[in-house]
Each structure stands twice: as structure tokens, then as C-alpha cells.
Length: 242
Image (cartoon, rainbow, N blue to C red; front, side, top):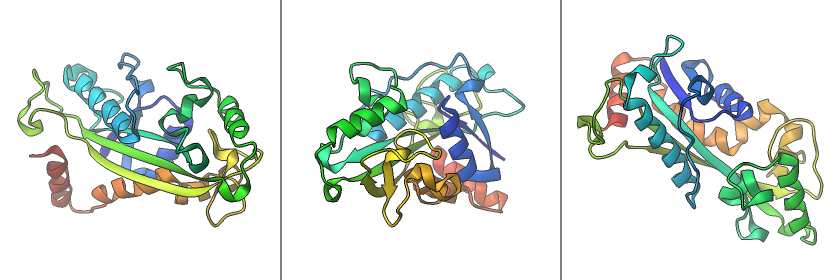
């Protein structure tokens, strides 16, 4: 069974990824690796941040293979994502700053309630027909070698760890006030196209079928949807670049 290291300590995100990918995988998170380096997400694109997180963590693991053995599992891949909300009336903001929108001068994430409050203030005079927005997600998947490597140029990795990218988007609009029933982040303010309820009201089962992260993960899952061990090996070799 393929083991994925999800590059997050966020319980909500971990639960969402587990629910969407299902029992085909085993999962580890950064909570299983307390000494893992903190990766600063300073890229100006979702893809840039996702790739940076996945590559840096894969290199950290590969530099010392004693880190790999944990809970009877070894991570085969690092899965890192970056996602956020793009609002047309704000020229695509908050975008890559979605998690720290209420305090852009800080590297730490803001509270969800503070981010939502700032978004509503900025859109206070914007009519409903101009409140178009979308959630966007980019996932980077990087293989982790199980042999310790001494340089950044192992045979199968050329000069760097290669990341495979999967993306997804969910179109919708921003409400005038939160509608709570669950969810996290901007879920209480976002109504996906074709629905009258917010993501927070729709519930995890519905959200996990149509969300930006669900669409990106569906593309990733297709790579591993195989019953043949030979086909699986070919898929792994393709990802490893060997």
C-alpha cells in the first residue's frame, strides 16, 4: 500500500484528504515528524508553495534514512498542497495569502474568523452579481527515496527532486454574511456554483465531491488506481523519472 506524507499539521485538511483518497493509501502527517523543518511559503503562486514544501520535505527525509521508519510505514511520497480563495472584485485576492489575510505582515496564519471579517469589510459595497470567486488548489507530489542519498543528484532524480502537479478549482460567489454549520476557513462565506448553501452548510460529504481539493486529488488518485502490481510499478517508475 502506498504511504503518503501529507505536509501539514492541520487536522481539517488531513481529514479532508483522507476522506477523499480513501483506503487505497496509508497516511502520515507532519505530526508524525516533530523535527521536520518548517517550510516558509513565500512563493507568489499556489504551485510554487506546494512544490517548495514537497521538495524540501522529501530532501530532508532522504538526507537521513533513519527518519523514514515510523509506525511501521515508510512514506513513498510527500504530498503538499497550497490552496486559497480568489475573489474577482479584489483582483484575485486573498490568493496565496488566504490563510493569513487578516495579518499580511505576519508569516503565521490568522484566525478564520478574522480572515472572514476582513474579506467582508473589503466587499461591503460590492453587489452580489460582482462577488464571483473560486477556491483553487494545487497539489505537488514528490517521491521519497528509501536509500540515503549524499547529494542532490541521485540517479533517478537528475539534479533535483521532481514534483508532479495536480490542480483543481471550484467556482462560486461570496455571501454577505457567514452561514455556519461546519467547515473551516472561508467555507461559511462561499457558495459553490449551482448551490444555494455555503460550503459550511453543505457538509463534508458533498464538499468532498465538488471542492477544489477534491478535484485536484481525483487527478492524483487516478495515477494509483490500478489492480496490477506491474502497472503500479510502472506508475512509480514514471513518477520517479527512472
